[in-house]
Image 1 (spheres, rainbow, N blue to C red):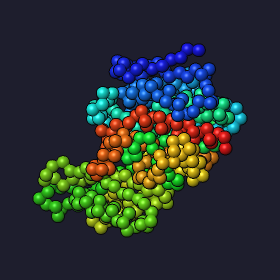
Image 2: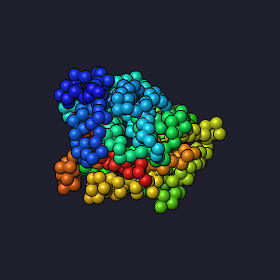
Image 3: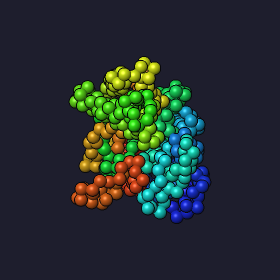
Image 4: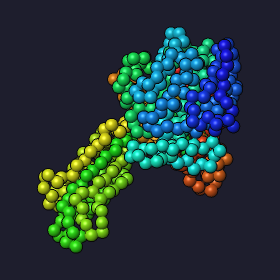
Length: 451
């Protein structure tokens, strides 16, 4: 059997426009269950680094992951998986049956972000594209999805190499459109758990911009938040800015509304229930001396408890209408509140029993000193949807440290803030991060297969 490998990093720039470069191939004849995982991962790193560089230099926006998807399908096919492409959009599902045992699903997301990369790295993305509004934007893997995809392939490679150590069905999923909350929904809607196999557990990882590379952050219970995007159209009666008494000014109503909405987390919801109501955008008016007819607000809502989410939305509708009524607006000019259900993401709840097992496995592989307790965050991840189907599959997602250790240590010593996820300057220590991710995920999967 031929052994393929990627071109070295120095040659990758020449292939920037061609994502379907030569895939990583593992020759099953080289499989050796007696080789320590750390050694076999280290041996695979040069190829995985090349894959990472390639993916990093060729990011694609949500719903446009055509080439990234094709590359993931190529890698899994060459490793011996039965692969289904274009599932739920540009999703990829790879199935490997290795005897009788549980089904373990491992998921990675594939989409990039509309960001112009400013890391200064020699391998930085230079990709640009047109967004939905026909504006030219940069494209960058500013949330680490290139690390996620590379770790997925690295884990698949290791599980193939260590097939003698486990029995069951391995389900590898490369998911599109995580950044807009659509990918997991689409794959589940098309029948991910019915067309293939209902997993006994679903595992995922996500890079962290606040944990040093080489370490992992584990958390049980709520890990990430419910996320809702809400538009509010506040209406009024416009006119001349010199005669405000003849108008009902929607900008004034919008200002009142913005302030009133802050009482939802501070006065309406229990202080024991974390939640956020943020007005991220406000647009209204066209000229200094014109009072407009309407103002648009755009909000993001965050919470963990589903009941809190419902309470937030109900309070927004009540408060905005109440302010409009107090201003004397008629029924036909009441505010319009639009919750974007297509972008709604439920909170990610790490099943406590599964989270404990995964944490123990990772500690055994990389050392207990390298496994931290990660705090809850108000960011969103559609990974949580895999645990909210009728099958009630247990899921867990762990945080993969990505900050170069010396940079992390310097930031702590100086009190500096590190570039966050979604920052144009986010640049993971990819070699150590990938190695830790592959070792951690592989060990967790093997142990779950054997329980």
